[in-house]
Amino acid sequence: MRHFILLLLLASLLGSVAPAYALDDQLTVANTLLQAEYDLARKKEVYLFLDLARKQFDIRSSGMTISTIPIKEIRLWGPLPEPGLHLIADKDRVPERVKIQIPPPEGEEAATKPVVPTPPVDPTAPPVAKKFAVQATEVTDMPSNYSLRLAGGGLLAIKSFPPASTRKGLLVQRFEKSLWKFSHAFKAPFQHYKQEPFTELLLILSPEDAQRLYWALPVGSALLIPAAQP
Amino acid sequence: MTISLHQRSAASTKGTNRFRREAGGTKLPRPPRKLLVWGALLLLLAILLLVGWSLYGEHLASQQPAPKASPLAGKPAPTDPDKLRKANESLAKRLSALAAKPGEAFVVVDSALNRVYWWQDGAMIREMIASCGTGNVLEDPNSGRTWVFETPRGERRVVGKKAAPVWMKPDWAFIEEGEPIPKDGSGRAEPGVMGDYAVAIGDGYYLHGTLYKRLLGRNVSHGCVRLGDDDIEFIYKETKNGTRVILF
Image 1 (cartoon, chains in turn red, green):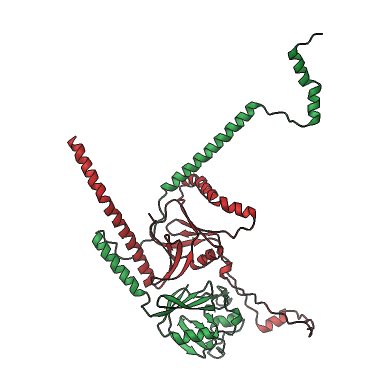
Image 2 (tube, rainbow over the protein chains, first blue to last red):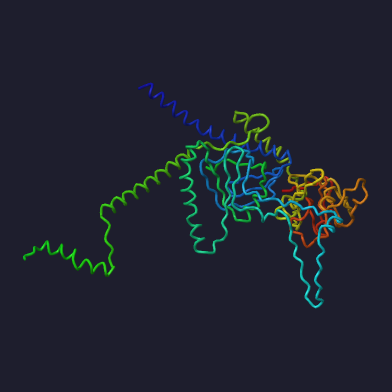
């Protein structure tokens, strides 16, 4: 009986020590994030910070937030990635870049191209405004639904919904969350059987913000993820 | 002939009444009750299996290990809470020393939105419409050299300023136009195309004026940041060598 009481006392003592460990963890997480941010700032890199509390991405440089991208909703399948520095290892739906076609030298062009007679210009016709077809990879060419693979193995999925104009669209958006959860729960045992990790951090953004984020996070770029909020 | 009540009812369902029902087509023959029960049981079993599978999937998700963070360079963090607290304070101080000082102005270039911002005392003071890189690829068929016309990312500093700049056409400008690359410096100078002012940020990249003002707001440059006349004049006058320019 005496031993049992002693054991109980020891257990209660250990229990009272537990909050100190939690504080240590907080300090360690803060240290990891500060160390990672300091290293990035020293290298003069632009990096992103996922602010879970404010639901936004901070675009930062030298510890200063120079722009933000708001997040509408955060969903998690499995645990949140470890707090610290995460590098973008791969991303899907990369738009194809325009390859510049080099014109042939003037002499060659004249020799190969048949001469097309230009139609006579009507002097009374109103002037036609020339439209500039810009051949470039712009932010509007970026996808708004995509996934980014983190170097540590996690998946950062970005989703956006255009404003629903039809009843069907509204219905899909209403049941999308349940469908997402169900499809992931259904897929998880298969992934477990294949011994493949299956964690996902899903962020829902507006289509424009999703495109901006895709632009701001090229492969190899750095993302700082803090600890989960209690 | 005598007929029992039971026999009569059987005759009525099998006889003329049956034909009347089929001809009317109002009621289909009912499936056997047993089949219905079995169907319902199977459906219930399928639903139970699906729910169980999903619950198992959710349980597995909670068991997954968290994706690992990248290892950090440098010394490992101290384990003693007091030392850890001091280390954090020191890191925070060193980080804030890298940020802009009070009163320090700097330039921010958003190549996605084609905007340039002038920041001072931690606030954005002026927003300007710009033209950043196209991201197009040029390959020299003769030498195999490749250029990607992107605006660079990261933090740079102003390294020089020029009024009435003259663009010295680099090799890619000749290749892009299908012209032979001059062997010496002749034929490379092109005055006027960079506008009235140019602010160098290193590696041949500039913030400069443009002749193509209608295209401001679009990605049309070869990596430089083009600005309108008033805006480039403002940047030229306000920046000095060493002013930081953050591009993303």
